[in-house]
Amino acid sequence: MTVVALLSVAPVIEDSMAGEVAKAVEALEEHDVTYETNPMGTVIEAETTDELFAAAQAAHDAVDGDRVSTVLKIDDKRTRDVDASEKVEAVEEHLGRPATNRDE
Image (tube, one colour):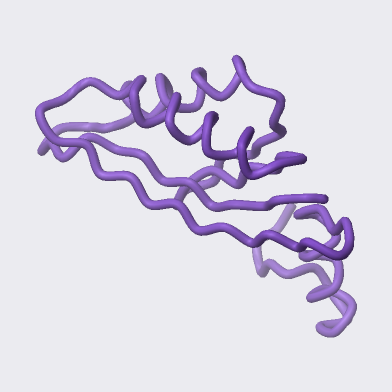
């Protein structure tokens, strides 16, 4: 089974959140997940929902602050393994090009 999720963890503050977001991302290192951070969150892949939830909990707990906002969106494909890169590749196949308009 492959579980893919989008995780966003951030303190509710006025100043830059980058340092606290870095703590959340660093907390993922203690878990058996792969991840990639982008401007809107972190895509996480895990073999089980248990591992995914544990990693998300660790990321949430790693952020300091009086108020922390966490959003977790999960795609749990239970009958086949599809990783995050394959999902992007499927869209690119339909587009006939990379799914970006940025110059590399």
